[in-house]
Amino acid sequence: MGKITKKTEDLCPDCFKVVSVPSRYKMVYILAKEKEGLTVQQITNLMLLKQPTITHHLNILRSVNAVFSQDRGRERIYTINRGAHCFEECNIPFD
Ligand SMILES: [Zn+2]
Image 1 (cartoon, rainbow, N blue to C red):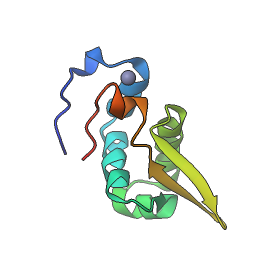
Image 2 (cartoon, rainbow, N blue to C red):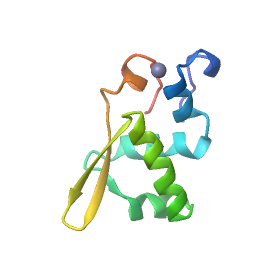
Image 3 (tube, rainbow, N blue to C red):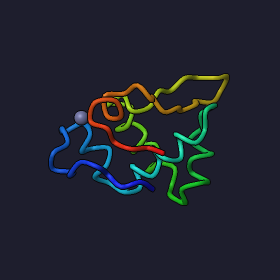
Image 4 (tube, helix red, strand yellow):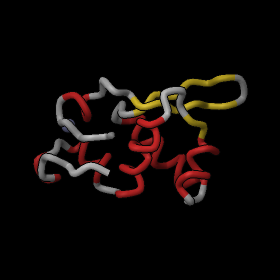
């Protein structure tokens, strides 16, 4: 996991939300590695957290546009939004 180049207190509130919880920030890294995106179940398997916790973090990441979600059949696929403000302007490293 890369080092945050900015001090966390310099980040805007949206970006602070992304990095302030280590497991939430770890999900950003996991999603950045998967071009095709991941389902909640796949993320849950990788993170060793309970699914409601994963869903909670994903909702927050989505609320700041750090991730996209799209429904594919019965599944919802989450992908990182590389052009997001958090990565483009506030320069949060994700790989
Ligand atoms: Zn920001």
